[in-house]
Image (tube, rainbow, N blue to C red; front, side, top):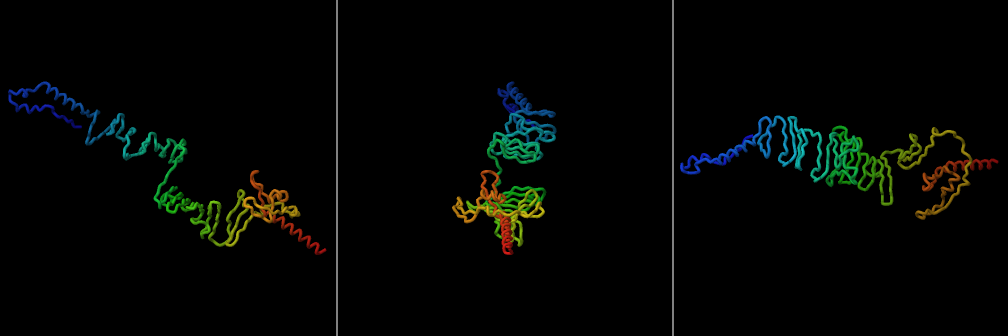
Length: 365
């Protein structure tokens, strides 16, 4: 480091003064002033082996071969702001708000009390495990790399902003290229629909009308196969199931464990409601007893909900004493009872067979 010294007295100018000029004499006070200035200038110099500077030191170029410690680099700090060794930064860098902070190496840890938000507590943290913590200092699950918000907060969230015609994405990948978005949750703002993809293909979406589309991108019934759950109006909910090939297919299947106990089939022209009746599912098979059709009370009644009249029907509580197998009581006392009319068909067939046999016997008597 060079030393800058500016003389206070111009001793050379005294030589040109007349011999009788009192200013030609060099005074002791002038010597004292100059020696004090020289001493102060040399006081700013540092030793070559262990240089230390106090006050403000300015360098055009600075080369450090060992350790370098500063109580502030152009930031008026009062404590050690930066320590640099021959291996790089060896201590914590504490600095006031900066427009840009760039690291050319690897940061072992990074903590900020606010990134452009004037925060007074830790706003974001990247911990030693590489996890990004926003608005919190701890993570809830070790396998999560991004944690947003704290359990003490009443509201937390992540916002994905896009243009009015753009897309917002949440991607799940296990490789490069197409494998980088094998799973995906996306929102298309132009058409206002949200879609979900698995194995690289769209499987489900919620369109702008609130329809849930499964296996299709158009509401079922529009010429494509798939399932649509929709709110047709404020008072009507609807499930549509569509197919695009000719033949019979199962629209809905019902299982007990791994055993199918019923299904709804439909073809190109009709619908079939199927309940399990396979021989392989039954034992102790015998002829049915004589039916008790005469004990069934057939009623006429009006429905309370809309006042509509039904000419022929049953009352579940009355039918339960005659044909309990056709009555459903629900799971709780508050559930309304119901009747499966189709379960009365076998008994009706048995009654017809018995009547037919009696008629044949009378005819042959």
